[in-house]
Length: 147
Image (cartoon, rainbow, N blue to C red; front, side, top):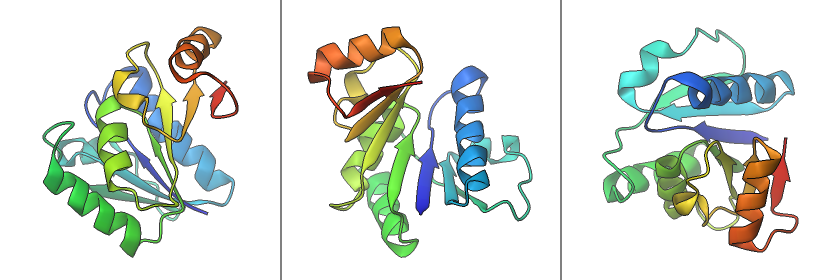
């Protein structure tokens, strides 16, 4: 499976670490991973060598950046992405708009501010508390998983 794993916004701390760790774990399981992030964050990514992880940068000026959405849609199609995992509200909002029909966008919720993540097709929540918040906003069900 080819997975696009992305974060935009704060590239420090837990969210950044989780984005990189997710890419590494997916690659270790045999998946191809395209790590999509802002150009200014590219130097913060470890050298993965031949670890099945490709780093791609994309400028994104905010949640409603239509040019970034257009470029992301092209990237998803050209690289034949099977699924998208996004670790920030900005990334989820932009990539949900960009993803062609049939390519699920999965929100990896790191905070209780879930307003921009609610359009995702599925949710990973890092704590049971986060799962309760997402369940309350979405009606719960099989689309929501906690760690």
